[in-house]
Image (cartoon, rainbow, N blue to C red; front, side, top):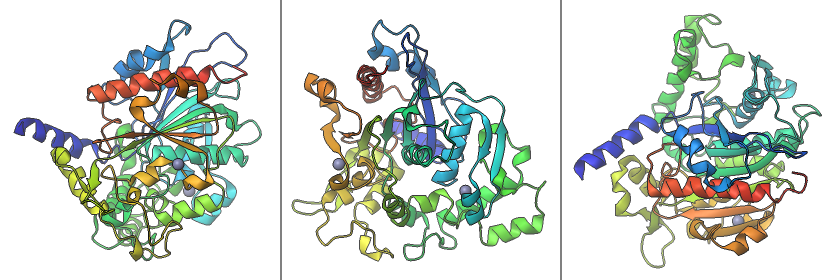
Length: 436
Ligand SMILES: [Zn+2]
Ligand SMILES: [Zn+2]
């Protein structure tokens, strides 16, 4: 028992950071119809290769629901994007990683945020055929979910030109995603009253300094530590050691509005929603997977505590305790949802993200959503019949942490069920798109 707990703790310590901001993708070979479907998902961040165990997923579990009609098994593509970059930068990197070409962050964005308009050149995209006739399924874990929403929003705005259309995104699945922000970023160091400023000597501040040091020596590092900082010219080939020291004193990247930490604040999420980001596309199928490892502190209270079952995941347990009693009134500006009578969904959490934020972008009253229990999702034929695009289907997992479903493949019964159901879901929604 103690050995198993130590193993789980070690796994969390080893994988927590590298997988905090991941994306990835699944894709299946063409079918004989006008519209050929490819399926993808996102997980990754800085690794361009699948984490251990994912070969088994794509070969086995993800294809259990495809039946005999599929001429080829689904293929999974993992895409590398900046682990600490903003949603905008990550979405641009994701697009060009798939299509190929030179990463273009846009003239206006690059001027506002003081970095180069262009990033790296990608001669061969991972799926160069990606188009409205060859759409992809996307799966994002944690910040990967909002990254896909940003991608969809940028496509809609014409950021990638007229050749890019929202129909290229067939479906979006998000797991434990902080669509509407998370208190965790303030606990790690973001100033609750002055984001994107970071508290000195906080964990977040240390991570920011580490990012600059790694970026400085990045030409010497293996590809697995790729931080995608090309457009910022931070390496020893581009800047002096003195310049590095200045960044270590106060970072122009980590403490800016163009980085992951600010994008997971409630302030940034509110700004995105005000600008229409997160509005549903009528042709895209949406599904979110919400993990919860807490329960109400006591009858009648809305604040939460983690269940003892999850004490094995020590870091998650400690984090869930703090999120379960977070004081939203300290935030400035106050978040749009702040109300004297908040529901318990603002304190129930998976150790990193409260469940109201994992549901979907925008409040329920401003979007279309159907909140289901995972177990009933596709076992119930009526749900299969009523699945439609332009609606968020929200599934909840009890006694699950931020890492229980993905990205670590541990082969648990819960994970096997998740991937099997996901394969079935993809097959079901493919049968509903009229032009495919
Ligand atoms: Zn940027
Ligand atoms: Zn809802």
